Image (cartoon, rainbow, N blue to C red; front, top):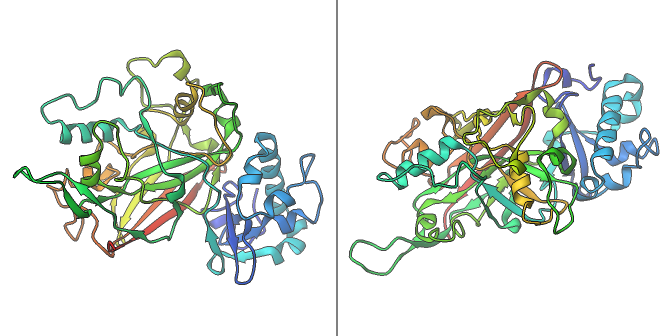
Length: 405
């Protein structure tokens, strides 16, 4: 099926993609938009023409909001109805005359944080990344901790510091390791500022506290995905993370795309996991292809420095969700959980500068970089197979480093 929207079929944002975001123009209130080609469709304005789309709920009210949360809360049946309606409206030329006035060029739109983040959890699900970090930090011990292949390790982050792509990131200050002279800990701007290329999962349907969400119910609760950059101050992290884990080294900023790609757009990207040994406990068991074939690019100041493959991830998003809730922790609309750094087997597939530079000892790229410098701009790009046989793009994530205050 083709779209009547000019240029959409030749773009990475055709009818098989249709990600959601929140946009505005000068003098207008933010509201939900759907990307098609190089345009944003004003979803509430178009939905208001026809009353109830299909046999589902009237979506105009849910889309006439400054966040996706009201729409996310409607659940899977409404999400599926909305997608069918969008494909019809943007694919059938009979709808072109009344819909075209509500197409806004992306270049003329201001894109906002797409949803209000309720809680944020970050996992650590790449075997390659965990192994690389273990070899650097524990050169005389086992690369993996004893629990790593039995459960998806994660930590609770700061929902309030999740920001939309394009937001500048201020270099954080904090404590670092004391010097060899036995003096007090060092304090100052981070000197080992890093990125982590990740994939974020956006929860729509909540769960009841005291219950758990099985792996088979993943698609009933998770609406879609968004690329994510977990900015990391490695020197602050190294001093603070024993024994409780990441804190100030992570909580200063996490960037996400302005676009949330529905799970339905990734149906053709589903792939089997690369293999799990030992076999996970029953509550973590998954059936069928539980991973995603999503290709990433890490771009530093205009240069592609790495291409991490999400298909290499050891733990799946369904397993992360099951583990997150197995103790009875509840889900809320707007919860965000992330995959952890995506890394592959080769050096050019590593998803963090810590790995690319091997702890700062092996400079990379045309500028011989190890960690981030003030003024650096990092862009994460991601594409996946689309259900129409081509490829679709997930929204970019960009951020520029500002000097510490």
